[in-house]
Length: 262
Image (cartoon, rainbow, N blue to C red):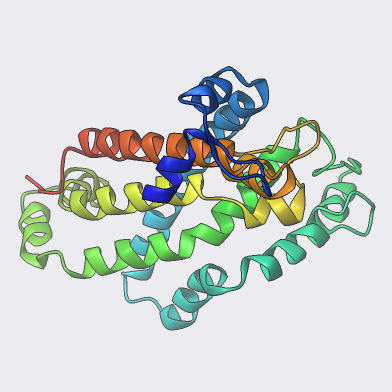
């Protein structure tokens, strides 16, 4: 991190040695249309994917905490995509999003007379397609954290609310959700960080296209560093990403209300 910070103030175009240029890299980053687009794409992915995945994970965790049959199998099935190599997952979703009739998704919508749709080749559908894959792969770890938190809640609290006449929905909303605040804060922070680190999915599925519709900050940094060999500029972009993550972590803490449940 220290080296990246130092290099961010230099022109370091490999193989030439670093040359101090002050804040020029930061000025270029904030005025670059491509980097601005990457920031907006990343924010869009985060705003859509993170809360959606958290809600789905919480619902699944609640269902799997009811002592249902085969719950061990379902827990494993939900968690498995998280520990599967992203490249393997991306190859699977490449088949699902195949623009021809051989693609699973186009086969499904073809049964009702729609399609085929170029899911990854369209500026309209490329980012939503990436988000769907990201949500599917990221639900497992969130579910596991919520499930552990649910199993750690004192049962007498819910029982007291039930005796007072609260129905299942009221107990969940007014008792369970507030008590899960520490877990929600933790899940929110790691989810935001994870969404800003999305790279493999973009690299395999779209390579940032079409027309930069799926270029996110990490992929933009990769292009600056390893395709354009502009290590100084890439370091400045990395520092910007680091600062944005710190700000979002602080905002997440304020939104959730801290790590103490009251």
